[in-house]
Length: 275
Image (cartoon, rainbow, N blue to C red; front, side):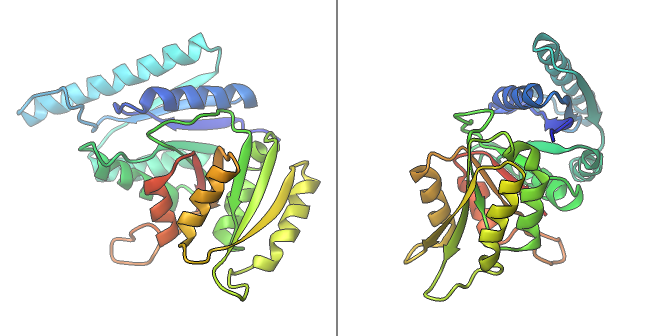
């Protein structure tokens, strides 16, 4: 089993080039078509224009320049490619992007960098795509990734439907990875994680798919769950984290449970989530 259709989000951030590099590498390893998508509403910081109509025209021109650069990179790497510019204001464009993402095997987005002005837009794109696309989302850290394609993965397992979906959505990736650790974080003397007893069954199931998976149970002690996960990533030389992404009901349908939000802010390796 392989991914055959991958989408990568393109913008004007410093992490853009490395995200494209990672996407091209994944596409080549799976023999997949890679589609580059950007938004016409992105306002590059170097554009100093006050007139709104002129600015909109210039922003759209910049979007097509980004797409042209992506297509040149894909052609140079011998990767089959396609591209699209999503038009509309930021909020509407984010929803359109999420809808467009529904017909891909994997969506590659970026982690929001709090140092940049577009941090709210990047977070909004993440919310919309994760909640509305129904597809697995590969979040690339703004600090980059030290190994693409990934070789050692960790599943943050709690037995929930979201975690289950994330695991099965990325089976094509797991089948190519050398070692997969199924991490179960125990927060007390009793086994409190929902579905924790199914972790061994998950390992057996993945083994039948040719995935080299094993279970690792860790007591949280005085640490919170995100800290335990980050520590285990470091201790086991992990280069990919897989977990469920959670939506909490509210008037604005804000994303994420505490663990999801924390890991997206502090991620040190790529994170794949599904909702």
